[in-house]
Structures are given as structure tokens and as C-alpha cells.
Length: 159
Image 1 (cartoon, rainbow, N blue to C red):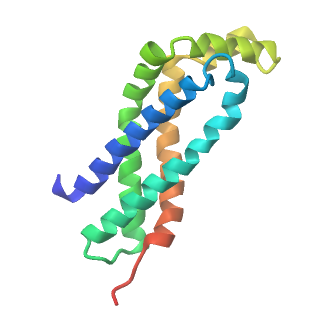
Image 2 (image 1 turned 45 degrees about the vertical axis):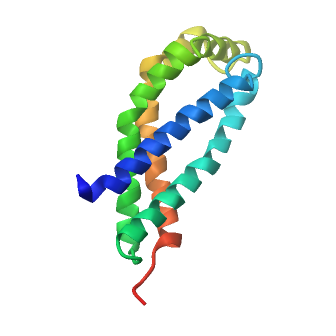
């Protein structure tokens, strides 16, 4: 457990930031009156996500004694992504049952109104089970990509 203590810490921090971001989105109306802007503005989450990965990999490098290979950084980030993926069903449940239960009906209505999907397609896509699967897969995919890139900049050879 001590070997992945850094990854566990940063996975939990990342998960907490996801929840805070969701509260922020809800508070500025992206789950209801401004839901038409959600698809674009939610992508700005990439900024805090990258910052967290940079801080996590720098923390891991410090824990490793000040040096870290790209592979070590990538593996660290990948473990964080797996932890976030495992926590994501909890986040989706909290979000869509307690924080923003109106999100799915609102996004379904918007998608149908804009002609992007039929009612049946929208209901099949915008629901808790679908979002849990999407968030778990997305956490690993985006975490792997982010880790691969951030590890390039945080690696450090022995002096």
C-alpha cells in the first residue's frame, strides 16, 4: 500500500476536485438554465485536471528521491486514473441523485429539441448507468493521455 500512497492521495484529491467542479457547474446554471452551454464549458475542467496531474507527478518524483523516468511518471498517472475510475460511480451517483437530479431530464429535452437525438436515443444515452460507464472509461482514457504527456515534462534524470 505504501508503494501507491502518493497515487491514492492524488486519486482522492482528483475525485474531490471533480465533485467541486460539478458543484461549480451546477451553481452557474450549466445543469439547468444554461444547459445549452454545458457541452462546451465542461471541457474547461481539463485545466484543473492537468494541474492535478502535474502536482501529483512532481510529488511522486520527490518521493522517488528527485528523479523519475517517463515510465515511472506514466505509471503513477495511470494508477491515479484507475483510482479515479473506481471512484467515479460514487461521483456520478452523488451528482445525479443528490446534487443535480434535473440534469438528465434537462439534457434529454435539449438534445431532442435541437434534433441531435430522438427521445429514445437521448434517454438511452443520458442516464445514470450510461454516465457511470462513460466516466469510468473516460477517467482511464483521459488519465492515460494526460499522464503520458505530463510525464514528459516531469521526468528528471539523476544529476
